[in-house]
Amino acid sequence: MRGGPLRWLRHVCDGTLFHEYRQCRFTVYPSLMEGFGLPIIESILHHKPCVCGGNGVLGEVARGGGCLIVDQANEEMLAAGINKLLTDPEACARFAAEASARTFPSWSRDINRLVEYLEAPSSLPVVIGTAR
Image 1 (tube, one colour):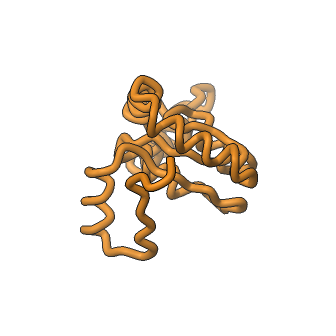
Image 2: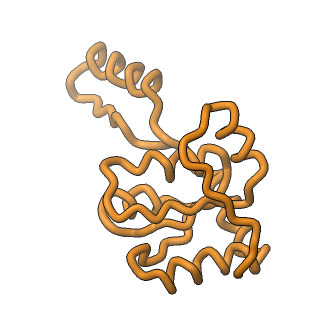
């Protein structure tokens, strides 16, 4: 969609970032290599769909829902993913609903599970680090 409302702000402060998340419909994260996928998680935590790749850790994060997975190394596929969320309100709403439904492990919950494990008889399994 040429001439569409696309802006790249580069580096911004937290206040600006939160404002932009409130205003946007979705995010695009076309990284080819990423060590953790934090920008994808951040988008999901703001209940915004993310167009991103499905390779490596990006795929691990994206496959949980809320992401339109594309081959981010292919310009045409990346553009098609962006265009889909710009022109298909139902798809965008579906990905947003998936993002809103996602949960992630928290330090406090995992610490509580670890304490339960350490205090429990050894026959009781405790799962640490999975989302409920």
